[in-house]
Length: 123
Image (tube, rainbow, N blue to C red; front, side, top):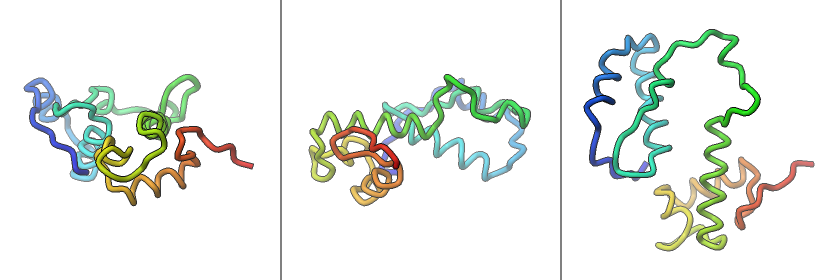
């Protein structure tokens, strides 16, 4: 993901070690990927709520709560706005987000975001 994680706090390691990992390696992989995607610094952070078992009812999207997809849209729109719609190059949104240009372009199309940071309306 082209992120440079330099530090993992002891309390994060302790939480990861205490968790019983009912989903085994796939669950661990998903948690690590989520943490890396959402990282804004070089410190690895895992929200402890990610390590809690939830009932099927509580897993349903709840009004007022931001989903991972919503957060992704916000981050892409903010990067595009900061870069004035520029996607590639050292001063582009892809570099700012630490992802390949092609990946960002794919996400922009899939999420319906204009390159100027405005979400496109679906018709």
